[in-house]
Image 1 (cartoon, rainbow, N blue to C red):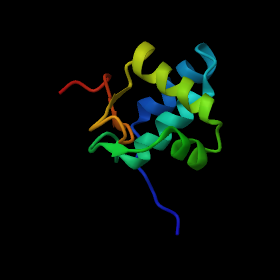
Image 2 (cartoon, rainbow, N blue to C red; image 1 turned 180 degrees about the vertical axis):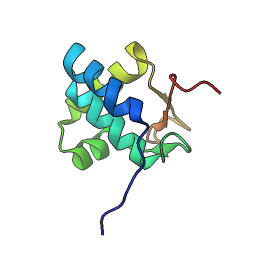
Image 3 (spheres, helix red, strand yellow; image 1 turned 90 degrees about the vertical axis):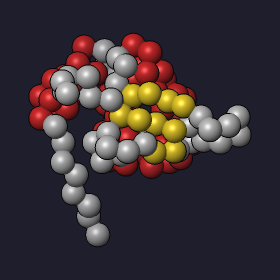
Image 4 (cartoon, rainbow, N blue to C red; image 1 turned 90 degrees about the horizontal axis):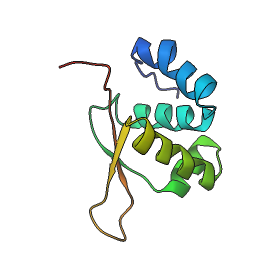
Length: 100
């Protein structure tokens, strides 16, 4: 069964070009899209390990780690928190282009 997700046009029209073309980090775009789907476009938070994201996206764990670093530190497109030291990170997708 295929699941449909709604994307904000900004994600394809601007963000894809910025991450893939300008930053040369297509893995960051893939991770952002994957997290977008899991959080319903930032409507909820989602817990996942780096290895789990790697498995689901087809990327290496180190590529996912670099992508998460890019998305949190440089682009501020996701936030990451933890409920405890042995718990998987909890991701929140941010949409800074939406005012509200």
